Picture 1 (cartoon, rainbow, N blue to C red):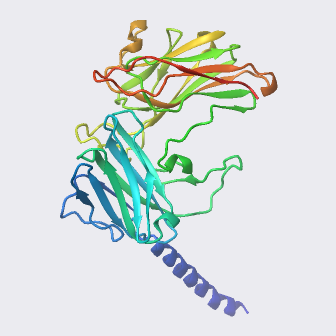
Picture 2: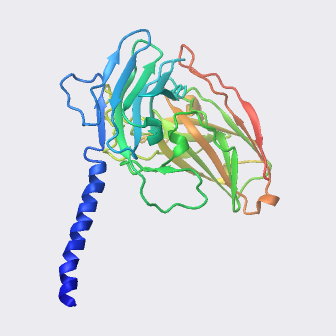
Picture 3: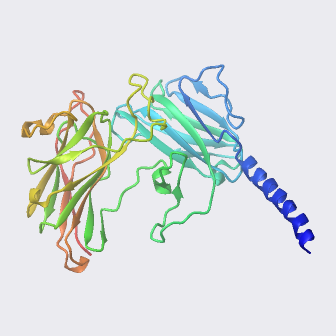
Length: 368
């Protein structure tokens, strides 16, 4: 009996290796491909990607012939581009049976360098087709594109997360709704235990001209925190947070992994990063007050440490913020918590001189 088991065991191992080989073949290397534009005529491409073709005209168009290496695989497309004032960058999938607009406009209205990702599901591609990008002018404005195939795998996710989660090789997990190419709204406020997270702005906005955000508090909290995403801040600089004309602290955004394609996406500045970076600040409650609290942002070099309030509007380089939240802990249940009212600066684009006028559109968030 022992001999029979010893003879059978190697056979099982062989079967497992064969199965593993079939699974790996479904998404054979390379499963990702990054290229800069313009695309050289002699540059090789993976077997699943045809030669990128530019079409000149009033609206510049880039066509990417794609044949999915696995009918069950999804495609994550990340673009690094420079937004044109009042322009658009449209993405479409053109299949053998039909064409579908994936995003009417990947621009976020900040008129500067940006990074956006788009997830294309298998049922959208349904076999070979063409991924097409069209610009609002005769130049595309895209500097770099990364194509990456992802597949379904078992994962452990909190039951409180309802959206599908996508993890590319960058290892940064994102929600499906953040990869649909649309301008998704964010929930204005959420309560968890004794803390409320209040949306200040989810619309990407240029702030270097001194845009002011307001938060009206019915009661000063026990603890406070500001969370945001920024685009455009050079390495070696940080964001200064001003609350009620007082310097509340600084935010040094996270430094992305050095293998990220966001590095060098700007051909004029190879050591810079193109894309959004996360940042946060613990705000001492002594800076807050009952009533309207003014929140502003500026920038400074890491070598600076001035307390001069006049620097509140001195941010010469383009700087955009989005997903700006104020988190407040009141140490009480939501039923007894005080209300919070915020003012969100309207979605504006830079004027011809690069300035942004300060204005506000108020909305209220109250405890349930």
